[in-house]
Image (cartoon, rainbow, N blue to C red; front, side, top):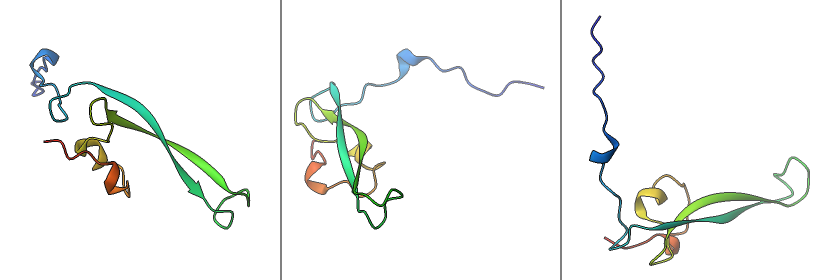
Length: 79
């Protein structure tokens, strides 16, 4: 049986930009769980790690598409 997988060369992958920036930081956002929905019956805050552009300080569109309900004012409009 022939192996049909292509070899992947990481050096051939392109770098992802947000506007003119290539650098990103990791940040936390928090989701609030009301006491009514919380399994503990108490208000809970759940951290969600996101990536933000170091230049514009917002979440790049390619990441925001994977985070349901992220506030639109936090999504980068960099092209």
